[in-house]
Length: 132
Image (cartoon, rainbow, N blue to C red; front, side):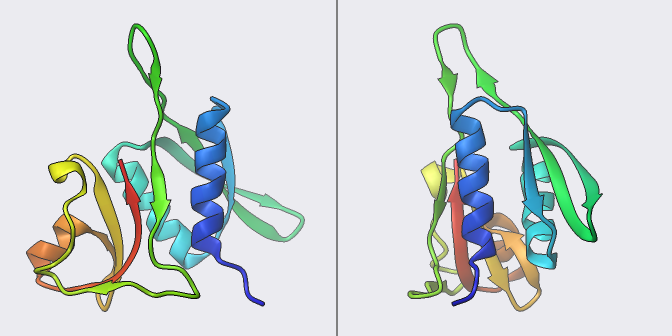
């Protein structure tokens, strides 16, 4: 059985966010690099650097914690399409997450992109995850 690298990314970021850890180490693949770039560009991650350990490449991401006076708001990541059940959408039916406050990450024919970019390009694809 193969590994679901997207679920591993989401789970490791979610767990580190719940434990209020500063960094997360993620296995480096083309898909994970693209997802981490989107998270960095959208402001969910502060910094990313490459790390090599015993002939394996990793991405070390610094998380951004949203703080207010009373509590810390958690970043919520939810895996939508999975190996057992793929979820596809055309560009007109891509869901808006929290009325545009969150993002959906899609795998399209033009690469991995956010829901806003996919609507602008007029392409649909597989909905990988929601983040808000």
